[in-house]
Image (cartoon, rainbow, N blue to C red):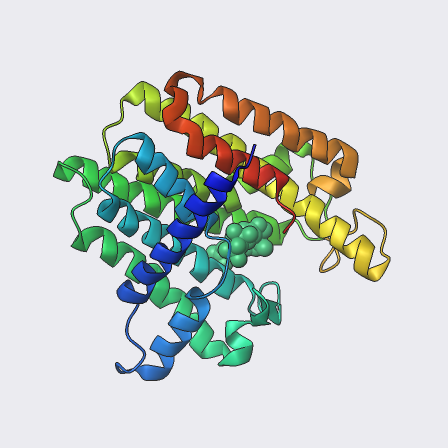
Length: 297
Ligand code: GRG
C-alpha cells in the first residue's frame, strides 16, 4: 500500500531529479536558443516521472551510487519526453495539449518539435557515454545497448509503428499485448534494469527485476486505458471503451472496464511476486507497482 513515507520519498526524488534535468539539458541562453528553450519546455515541470522513480527504486535495491542513477534516469526520461513530443505531432496523434500545456509543436512549431525530439534522443545517449555508470566498460556498453534497443524499431518506436498500423483494425489480446510490450513496456523495462545495473545485481536478480518490469509495464498501459475510458465517459458522455481520439484498440475496447481492471490487478500481484526474494530492500519497487495500478491520473 502507498504510505506517507512513499509519498515523501517520491516527492523528494522528483524534486531532486528536476534539478538533474535542469543541469543536463542545454541552457536556454545557449545558441540555438529557440531549440534549447523548446527542449526544456518539453521536459521540465511536468509528468509523473514514473520511469525515473523506477530507476531510483531499482538502484536503491542494488546499492547503486545515486549520481549514476541520476544519469540513467535522465536518459530514460529524455527518451520518454522525445517520444511524447513526436507522438503529439500532426503526423501522429495530432494532440494540442500535453501535461496541461500546449504541445511542443503548438507552442513552437512543427519543425522545432521534430528537432526537439531528435535532440532529446541524442542527448540521452550522449549522457550515457559521458558518465561512468558501472565498474566495467563491457557492462556500460551493455547498458547503452539496452537503452538503444528499448527505444528503437525493436522497442518503443517499433511499438509505435504497430500502434499506427492498428488504427481501425481489431487486434487480438496477444497482439495488443505485443504492441504495448514494445511501445511502453520496453522503456519501463529499461528504467528498472538500468537503475539496477548501476549497482551490484546478479543475473538471477536481474531476471526477477525483468519480470517485475514486464508486469508493471503492461499494468501501466492497462490502467492508462481504463483511466482514459473513464475520463471519456465522465466528460463526454461517450460509451466506455471507444477510444476518443482515433479508434485505436485498447484493453477496454477488447475486455471492458471490469476485466481490464482485473487484468491490471493480476499483473500487479505477479509484479509483487517477482520481488519476493529481495525482502525489504524491494519496498520502493513494491510501492511503485501499487502507485502504477492504483493511480487516478
Ligand atoms: C513517437 C517513437 C515514438 C514513440 C511514441 C510512448 C509513445 C510512443 C507514445 C505515447 C503515447 C501514449 C499517450 C501512450 C500511452 C501510455 C503512455 C506512455 C503515457 C504517457 O506516459 P506517462 O503517463 O506520461 O508516464 P507523463 O506525462 O507522466 O510522463
